[in-house]
Amino acid sequence: PGQSKAGSLPAAMKTGTTIVGLVYKDGVVLGADTRATGGSEVCDTNCEKIHYIAPNIYCCGAGTAADTEKTTELISSQMELLRMNMGGAQSRLATACTLLKRMLFRYQGQIGAALVLGGCDANGPHIYQIYPHGSTAKLPYTTMGSGSLAAMSVFETGWSEDMSEGDAVELVKRAILAGIFNDLGSGSNVDTCVIRTDGTVTTDRGAVKPNDVAPLRARINRSRLMTITPGTTAVLKTTFTPARAGVTLADVTVTAMET
Amino acid sequence: REKPPENCCMAPWSLLSNPPSADYRPYPATTTTPLDLARRAAAAFLFLLMSLSLAPGGASASRAPHPNAAAAAASAGNTRTTRPIVTGTSVLGIRYKDGVMLAADTLCSYGSMAKYKDARRLERVNPKTLIGGGGEYSDFQAIVELLRRNALEDKCTADSLYEEDGAEECAREVWNYLRAVMYNRRNKMNPLWNDLLVAGYGQNPDGTTGEPFLGSVDKIGTTFEDDVIATGFGAYLATPLLREKWRADLEEGEARALLEDCLRGLFYRDC
Image (cartoon, rainbow over all chains, first blue to last red; front, side):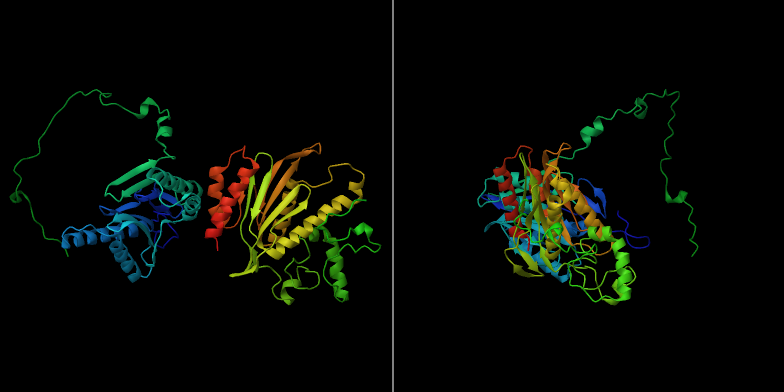
């Protein structure tokens, strides 16, 4: 998807995104939009940008879609191996953050993954932001992607310490909607993920769907000719010939290949 | 006769016993050669165009004779604005129930230095119009001077003396005039490097004050009219908030609170 110039490689599919994360009283809330763009074309209207890392850790990804997907998958499997090696102890965010930043720095920014890592561990709820070159920041609230300024303006006027879950989720939805409607690289729906300090996780894919086209499509009056029900054409005769049973190598003629 | 407005510093031409010539420009005179005279004749012919472009050659030009298309660029080095030097950042505007409000900070930066901490970036140019400007501060000052000069000429020239009303330009007229000025300069590849917001009242055909008006003009002459506009970095940080919170029946206090919230966000996030 997305041709830049004739003869050169097609533009990588980018997520041109709005992703957010914030810490509230009993945990963290992550949010993301669902538009994936390749150049100025929308490739995927409903892609998933909140990736699983561990049962108590999720990661939103902006930048090159393949990079965010594969990087988070890689670190997720490394975390699982670590849990197995450490007798099942719960994963910590600092571990995931360090694994991600060390890998991204090694690639000197060539892996275009900008991530908002969030979750709850033994030390409480945390949000980290990780840039493609490997720098990290630990923050109470953060936004990334092309719609980050739109979302940050909502956060700066709405965030306060120790919010309730309802308020936090509402703020995250408003922030993503600001990105969806004011940034061309973001669009479609809002996905949210709430990770609580008591260990429960609620992922809501399609929490808000302001751009749903299904009702519009349903209103199109298509001619009855477009949908032909089975039985419209009368069946005159039916014959069934089974394939030859018991075919073996003896029935096959082998000819050497011309090299 | 009425006093000139308090911020005006230029005398009306009709009061001067020796009014300036048709090709007047506010630079010190240079010595006149026969070639210059020929150029001046050509320039006098182009006077209307000159007045639209604010000053011949532009506010940032070096002090050289009339920029004839053939002569100017070659001899005096670069006489076009290619980058802003002292800059202001965003200006925010909102149209509410009974009026229109602009907001801006008072910083003018010199690259990465906070050079002028108390600069006026919102100026009233005539009884019905307010303009706010980001970008190159000297160009903004020149534009304000030009618009005030126009307002003064409206007030003091023969036309206005015999009419009761309707001589003042309304905000929409100022906005359209600025579009012409900015686009004209852009076509000469010597822009006035500004993002302007024009706010005020329009004018009804019968001369009475019309509806509140808010419009923007940018350095290449693009114009846009809307209920909420933010220029510069504010377009990314303030526009989402303004669009979310705007209603047609906003009171003045609510509008002000909304603009203040946006400016606070810009203070946090705009270097």
